[in-house]
Length: 301
Image 1 (cartoon, rainbow, N blue to C red):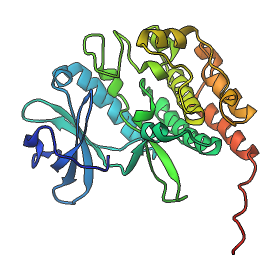
Image 2 (image 1 turned 120 degrees about the vertical axis):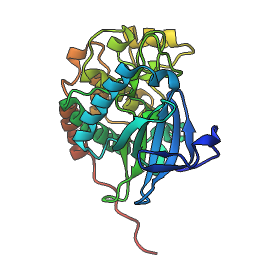
Image 3 (image 1 turned 180 degrees about the vertical axis):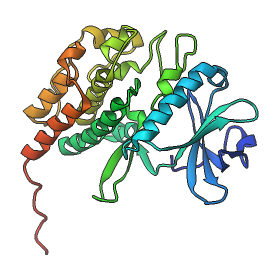
Image 4 (image 1 turned 180 degrees about the horizontal axis):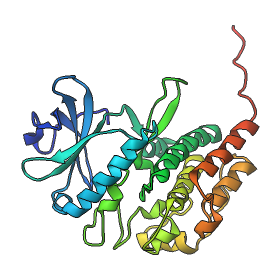
């Protein structure tokens, strides 16, 4: 989200949406186009996601999304991307004005290499904390995956911390409004990280579905791939429903404690997972407390 390129629709350049003037395009995807913008008075940078026209026409779906965005915004959690504004263009496209993030998606990072256990645990703890805040106000992400997680610099530690993107966006996608990489048939979610209850297209899911997805992401971080890999979406969904994932320690140097956390997150029955994101935060804190101290820096030459 830091690289501006020529927009596919030059008409956006110079447009003012939600008090922000568009200066370039950041990305184009299944949901629409993300534009780079600046507040016309304050100069504050922002990202504007302009939703696809077919999604924008379904006002009831948009209303639900706005309600959800309001709830997430009320959390004001540093691990959730901040939403500044929402509206419609003159042509009827719905748009969302968000904070502009500097960093890279977790998916891009994982395409280069897996992460050390300590780094993965820290990132997962931050994600679980953000989910705890969202779940408390009744908001479930439904499509948590590495591409919906952005890594930004943490000014307090000098390291990185995660931010969850697109809360509520997956809810816009229903059986009649398919989007690439977001659903298969009538399913909401991404098969590589989809909870079994979502794979069954269950009518009612809760925050434990997000925890299963987070377990798939944690597995991917430490092993270098998701727990289940297949050529087709149908086979992936079958694996999420019935497959058994190897312990991460069979493929990477991770602790038995992390194996236990991942195994519980990947339970097929939601009742056997952590009952809440808060309990996952506690379990990860125990891993951090038991970890050996970092090696001392080398002596000066």
